[in-house]
Amino acid sequence: MSEYPAPPLPAAPALTLAAADQWRAARVWQRLNSRWLALLPVVTVVLAIAFDRTPDRCDSLRACTVPYAESAAPAVLLVEFLALLLRRRTSFVVPAAAGLLLWFLPNALPGPWLPTAACAAHLLAAAALYREDAGLRRAEAQLATLMGPPVPYPWTLRGADSPIDPPSRPRVRHILAALFGAAAVVLLAVGVWQTEDALARAARADRTWGTVRSIHDGGDSATVEYRLPHEYRTLTAEVDGDRTVGDQVPLLVDGTGWYRAADEWQDSAAWWLGVGAAGTFAVLLLLSARRTTVARRTIGDSAPVLRVRARRTASGVLEVLPVDGGDREAGLWRVMPFGDEAAQYAPADLDGPAAWIPDPEDDEDDDEGDEGEDDEDTPVALGKADAPVEALLYHWGGGRNRLVVLRSPETPHKWTAARAVVLAAPSKRDRDGEARDEEAQVKAQVARSLADDRAEDPGGSPEPARVFGLPTALRCAAAPVAAVLIGAVMNFLADQDSLVDNLLRPLVMGSGLLLGVMGGFGWQLAVDRDGVVLSGVLRVRRASWQQVTAAALHSGRVTVRYRSRPLFGFSAGPARLLHRHFGGEFDPQQVARIVTALAQRPERRPLTALPAGTVGSMLWLNRLVLAGYMAWAVAQYLLR
View 1 (cartoon, rainbow, N blue to C red):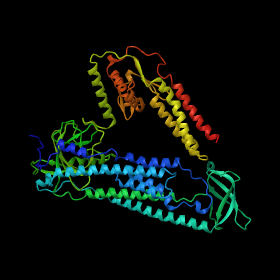
View 2 (cartoon, one colour):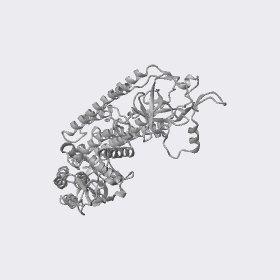
View 3 (cartoon, helix red, strand yellow):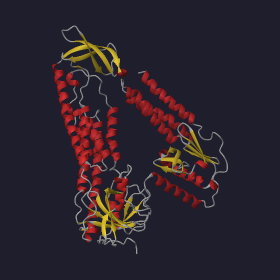
View 4 (cartoon, rainbow, N blue to C red):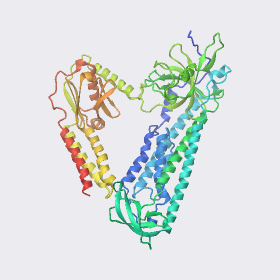
């Protein structure tokens, strides 16, 4: 008998493989509800900046005053960005409200088509989120039906109270939410007051003309000399904007020291951005505090429960499996601890009867101190074994709050209970249950490559020395054609007087795009007797077989590795796309497999060496195209 016998456990319905498949089928489009949606407002802002043709100067006070509704448009996108980025799951209301506001707010976005396109994109994202949320609700309803009525907790069967204390009250989050909310109200009041005060002063002020005498801050501000009406003394004023010495600047002055350039835009967008950011943080903090408040609800004596199996993955995350599936079945949920409390089952001994008690290991850890580790992200300890163990999963308090009761696979097989948050397993997992982290995926890919190579060539015949890469014509034409197209787009988006549009965007963004095209189309990789040679964007990298342990295709790149450290690599996107449609000997997956096989099996390495200069003969073209593009970017700015 085990030193730690199993405690009395209630009878619970089992999560079967059929129920798990039904739950997966109900979950649709779950990939969409992620932080990648935060790119939607970012792209909207980028397009708005690119197509904005608002002049730097205006004519009259009424024309120079931007209405509040128009000034609030940037704040709408900022609030949407923060909500989509900071929340793990986002309601469809966020993009829907943002899209409708961008449509109804006057002049929120420039151009005749951008407001319509932005509104349509936001509404499509909202519709996709709504469908995903409807699938989640349907899946939760199926689980609720499967769980049935509540059943007692293990300690309730023994007539004892819960050994797990509730989490702490979210006082700090409530205080911070109150501070951010107060800051939003203050910013709104101050912004409206200052804007209205400036408009009232401008309406009462006299109009005069000043002359620019000096330029400061690289042309962003200037010193202007002017005279008040009916006076002969000369005064100075500091105005913003791109001006030149000797320019005549219209000024509004009231004789009390207040002045303003009459041709400058009066926009309250900065105040709205502050209000939006502070208000968003306040709301998010309140939502987080509410989740903790829900978790603090008394667990009670019973709750709906499922009988499941639990497995710890290679990355240390606890996963929930059906009871009747294989050991390599993909997990349905990831279980993360919620708070610091846990309990364990102590069998009867001379000191007392069997009981559920607070985990003494947690107390020892608290006494010793936890050097900066985040308990909220630490998986429930299962031991080093990867084999699934039996467990109970209670659903309590609403939301994603669960209580997991499980048996450790290691001697002495303790039974433990911990409060946990349950999240859906990543949708990109394979059915064999591999972990998503990069190191685990690379190891699994290397193992598969070696197994496939040994199955195809058990004798280990030497591989011929050869060069992998896209066709020569494509490698030669990609960089020049891309440079011409990028230059044409940048010239179309350029503004007559803008440093960002005319120089920084073509130089920084254009060069980055050009380097990306060179990396995706211009690579060459050679294997021979001496090792691996890669011709990248602007130089050639070499590594001997003693320095290479594997190669893997991961996150869109093929990387040649020494142990777990990448040495060098190339972008595999264009090659994968072209190989999928046209075939050829440049499949990145096959390239990684061959390099891995040659690194791990010395008998498979080529017997001959390739001539010097076989790889990298087109680097001069890449360097010439990049230098020519950068010279054009600078020259077109200087010649405007």
